[in-house]
Image 1 (spheres, rainbow, N blue to C red):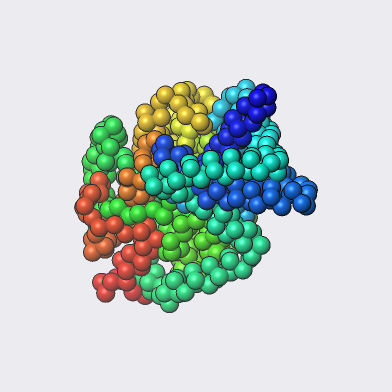
Image 2 (image 1 turned 30 degrees about the vertical axis):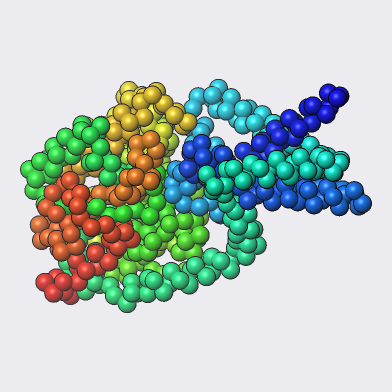
Length: 539
């Protein structure tokens, strides 16, 4: 017996195992467990079936390029499975390749900003090596199986019989995975018919939000209040449920006491965000537009629709609508044409001259103070609606700005260069101080907002503080923790806050844990109802 006769079954088996793992990456990432890797997939069974059939046909007709075609197919399964499995495990939604591909450069930017230059280059080099090795491995495995299935009848029997025995043993124990092919076909369909699918989604959203166009309680108010909406990055229910965040809970109680001493009334409750651990723009859009936005297709559909969002409604009621989005680098129509904001503050026109802190281009305190000086301090004939999309508490939680006591000294932000930041040993890919740094970052953002409110001198302002989503793994768990975020209604006019009592808001800063869950997109209806009461002063 020659050496090849001995090694061929082994190398063939290794090739099958390698291809199985490449295809099964989706299932393992979505639900990491040994059974996930042991269970056969429809794709590997189908691949073996095709190889056996083509091997038999190949004895009569040679099929050229089969190994290249199958390599591309397996690589497509792997890339889709990697992206889809990671997204489901970390964020709870499906990737739509045609819509998410433009966000790949942002991932590299986040890695660059969360690591030293040396580590960033090392990760990029490792990624390139892994991709090249993966492509070579898939091609070698496919080529080996193609050659074996086309060589002899005995080889085909060994491959088919071995896979059949393995399937007969494992399927009763672990089931069968897939088919991922269905998702791949859906991805191709979405890519080919993208405009049509987005248009269909837009029409559904218009129907779901038709009620918004039919009512505008703010247009009838005699004295419409100023409205300030603070969206704190990763401010989720875990901060109140997890005992590891006891320090934050003490800060929240101290903040409640400060607000009470400052003449503020507070009511709070939980609402459920449409996303978990990331994709803040989906949650922000759902909140402002009153419709659930669970994925990128709905986001694009929302902006392709003629639906009205809260800024549109308030603009029609005579408000000056403003958004501060300090980590937005360029304007693409999302905030003005899509959401209806009149004035947009983003990275460029916020004119920040200080250092960067982690992922955030500038401290939350700077963005809040800049908008205050430009808009609120100057006042005007129209009431203001200002949305602050805060970013200092964004992953990777490795560098936090100091809180400047004298807000009037913040200026162009250069003062932050003269103050020492708080540093933590975390990076984009992990760290030893993840929970500690996360809590510190939330404490910074939360305290910044509270200190700002204590500086305000306006009885007819209503403030909403909320989060965009729960913090990502390992701080909160997508499968076991609720997707809830706190909503706080705050004002020095108790009557404004009391309007939200019927919507389940309790007279406390820490929300009730047993309140029935509602989606955060429902806040818009709660707001409308709060200002549609018979007691409201009318024009």
